[in-house]
Image (tube, rainbow, N blue to C red; front, side):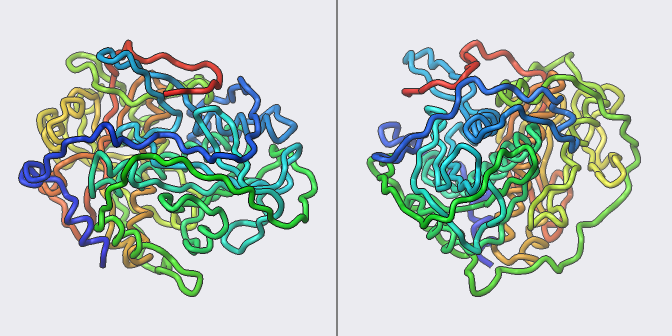
Length: 502
């Protein structure tokens, strides 16, 4: 299968990094914001109220409420706490500032775009929109009905998450497709959890026919539809849907770079993962993920009263962690792990493909070592004893933060089982799940007064050897570190939406 060829070709090793040293063409860096020129722009009300339900409760499956009784404030609240700009960071050497967003992204490059359809949303025209986070506004690309079998026609709001792979491949080359898939998982959970915090349920569809969705939302040629997220719930202010015909308003997408460099290996894999309307790329008929029993029973999860809105907008990717004495409690670790164990609402998530291994450095009540997490019984199984700080940093391409953290994770994805169930399409789903877990890590850590960061770069096969993994049962797809973050004085938070002119 194509996924195997791609995955092997994009593994990191000392030799591969030596061969593929990259010099970044800063003059050709892609614009991080997409705009559609010549289309109506609809305001989303500024300063939407923050969902006050505790973030930990949302991660455990609780629903909040929203005071919005009209479409514009509802959309503003939903997007402000899932996809908007949340802070700026100063570059001391140049005096420039760049934007940070609520949804995390590899290298802060943000390949994911949020398009959405509305049908019967009170006070808002039915149609197709693109969210512009630089202005916290919605660009209206079409109005009227957009009926199609490719999306849930009963949902008043449907998001189509697309990926602009060039934004990542500019920096990361052929490995960038992995990071784009992670970022779809991040964005999916940012959107789903924001919806839950204001009282909506969501469902993600990955089994859609790609070309039909392209015809539906007409993204730019450099964007690929990756995931469809439908929202339902009594908190969505609705009216009777219009029956008018579809009218496209045109609008030319902005050019992101002077030149986009082709990456044939990515193109080949993406083509292999596409799904047509005439058939599927697999059905989930394979065996469930293996279950087991650990030897260390986790305590009751730690609690936190920090509201979802505050946590979502204060989330950052830590640059490093305070090594040495600061530790975290076993109850905090239990809460973080519990946040990842809840079912994911998606058509590809009947069984889970990710197994968590953790390198415990400084967790009170837990001896340093490598552990496997068994979510079914909330237990840890020790697979190696001893200090793992040097090993975790070394496996993560020598990045000190993986050793300075309190705990670092290897997400092991069962790529073979996903391929047996869904063909090459399963490669997407494993990485979506890893990104979804990553965003839940981010929010749980922030709610508990800790910091976190995703690590997409690691020595793949060295991780497998260190964990004594059989590749047919799983391969590493993501690393993650959680601990006490080193303060970053360059960051300034935004308390309300505003236009950004980076």
